[in-house]
Length: 252
Ligand code: PEP
Image 1 (cartoon, rainbow, N blue to C red):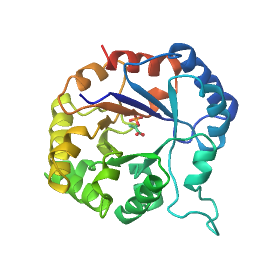
Image 2: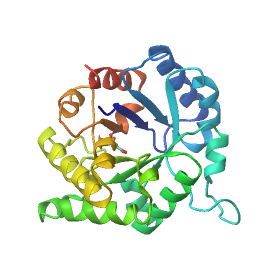
Image 3: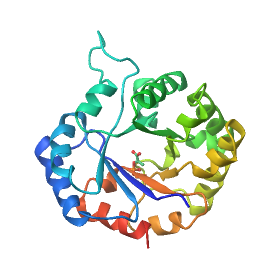
Image 4: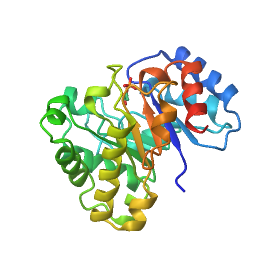
């Protein structure tokens, strides 16, 4: 039985004060909560302060990105040590916005996964097709390419730590969610791909989140699908009440 995991990606939103206020609000709701893993991913500037607030609760901290080097002359980049120092255990890698707006490649994703794993972090690796790729029947091909290249030369014991987020690009921030059937079909394909790349045990243990306009109203029908183990939530994770409802409805 895979433990559900709901993560909130706050993207480029919230000052430190605003982020702390949401984190404190969530901590009140989920001071002790054992039915799912809950992760929040504030912007870099707020990580440390948010970490101080949630440290003794069941909410865990994640970052939205990591750079693939240990340290050095990489202006604007953040290393895994810096993230861990700020209290992060999780890190999102390969989000479609990083791929589309910042030119992140599958090779970059692979390097980032490796360094995050080396530092004992839990990566959330995103993959998903664009609308024209879905319309051209290329969804599985795109998923296979992104995931196979992303996981290249990652040993099975480390792969067991990776969470995969299926995020159809056409559903992110658009209000247009994949139907539970569309999501399940993609998740099943991903699980079978993990089995081909590793083995049955890794496939059955890997948690696969769905991401793309997840809301309190649609999470339950997604979560009842066999291969959907949680959600990566953008917009609806910015508000204490909507994220709380999503987490609660996910484990109904
Ligand atoms: C995301 O950014 O990962 C995401 C799924 O965003 P939204 O929930 O807003 O579609």
